[in-house]
Image (cartoon, rainbow, N blue to C red; front, top):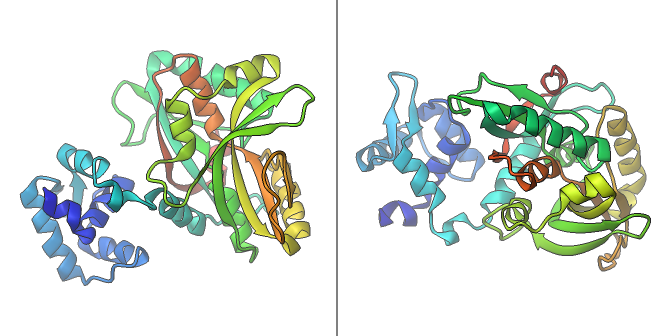
Length: 317
């Protein structure tokens, strides 16, 4: 299957089909490919889809379009690292562009993460999530429980949590250029000034940094929510310094709607290097919910940046 690994158009089709689990036709695929910088006619997309069918990576679902097969999912997940570099930041940037949330009216779409666990673990996850929210180290103060999404396996229950890339979308819609800079581990000890233990840049990464910290067991979120001392997950964004007042006003409006940020903002925050003419914004990550569940032994699976959803659906828990 080296042909798919070296052919960017085929890899991009597989990526899109993984991101959108519903059957998709050539016309819609062509539109999404164009968004990703690949301008192809419907006919050209059909040609590539037939190739992927022949390889066993996609299958046709009646007249509704194609979906990935298990082989296709395995292939895109094991694609060459060189093909995957930048995939995470590109995905998050697309979600930010599709975010339409207006903090003044509390309406519009937010970006979300989708997690699921076996039914028997539901109550444990609810307690884990609630503890993080009560400790004030999540990105948003609510989550949504679902069981009717086709991405959720039989015998499992799903949890929709707000993804912090929502903040990027809100700032962009207000005309403020924002860069998702780092994902990191931040250590908090009571009244002491917090400090970053590790930072990983989003650009050039083939995996979400925060997911990496969780899977490597490098967090102590449970310690933080129970004692006030621990290492939790946070993001660092940057905007032009002159936008500071606007950012403060937007953040205040979003806090009124239940968002929890920023932890700190400034030219120099905590132990980060000073960035002249840039405002660094540090916020707790919504992945602290997931990380806490993992720490206490929940068999939780999560898709970061699973899509966009109306804000009202998050509230109707």
